[in-house]
Image 1 (cartoon, one colour):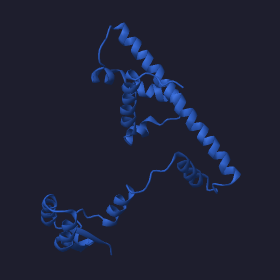
Image 2: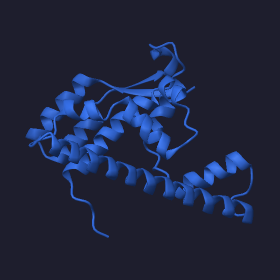
Image 3: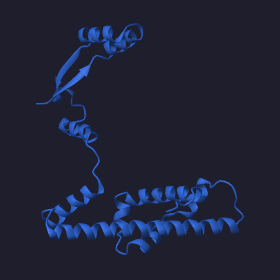
Image 4: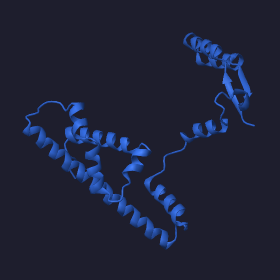
Length: 190
């Protein structure tokens, strides 16, 4: 069974106070003597009726380095097509996948840039000057607007599934934030 280590908080706070008044060496020596580490079995501290092994897995996940886009593609190809990543067939799938995602990103960026330009024209015609208000942004970038972008971008998007799993709301928020960035930042020069 896995054991958890709990530190006596009061003793830890006392050590923190001492560290302000003593040298690091003295604090380190007193820390060895004064900190009480209590070893408990994970089942003794089970307050959520779940297996605590899940909590350990969650804590360790943040320590793992993020995977690069190439590593993610490699993993997807091996899982979906069940082929070795270094085979010619896998390399072919990988090239097609990377090209697809690059095309997707470029098309999405172009749609956003075009939409921002249209929005600027609308604001100019309404003689709206000054800062972009949150209400104005929410009114323009609504669910119908995002559905329009999705229909231009991906023909086979299952909107009801996106709504059901919460992804649609995240996508709406993402596009609103993209609008803020594109509205106020000049385009990057190549």
